[in-house]
Length: 207
Image (cartoon, rainbow, N blue to C red; front, side, top):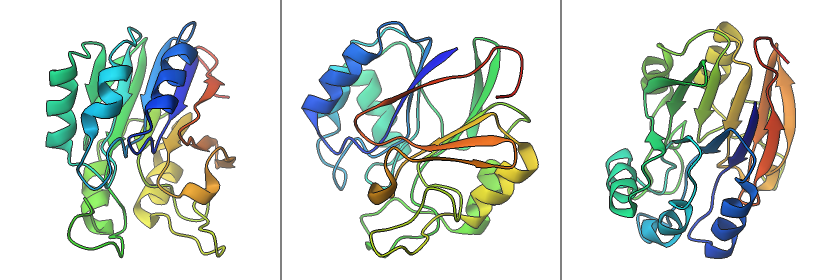
């Protein structure tokens, strides 16, 4: 299974157009949040991304709420996209789970769509074993190093990954680690970024 992964478009229409092109030939598209800037401009990229016909999984970032994202997907008529936040679905026989928002709570103030670690633990509790986990925030001490080198990820997400061992974890949020990949236990962790990364998930087995 070929999967196109991206995050943090932040209203970048040129990046969105490139992703539409990259989506040709993949089996699944994953968008790990932050389509908007502080709740503004969701339609800028979603109206372009709606041309993608492949199944897509989206989670909200800390720049848009889940309700805003679902409404924007509906308005864009992106019929192949599924928005997840504390829930899951199955695509091509692979169980998927999604949790969006900034985790832990960011220093950005009231506009940021954030959750604390205990809320994250609850939203991650239904994550299936060995599937795909889509989160906006990275697991702690993986692909979450800010420009000063400080880790900014989530302990709750790290715990869920170690317990559930998803085959693939797609995240974003920490811009300085865009495009980086690491492994945590048996899980491949990708901080996708806006340029898009195509990964291959072998059918019926772990990496």
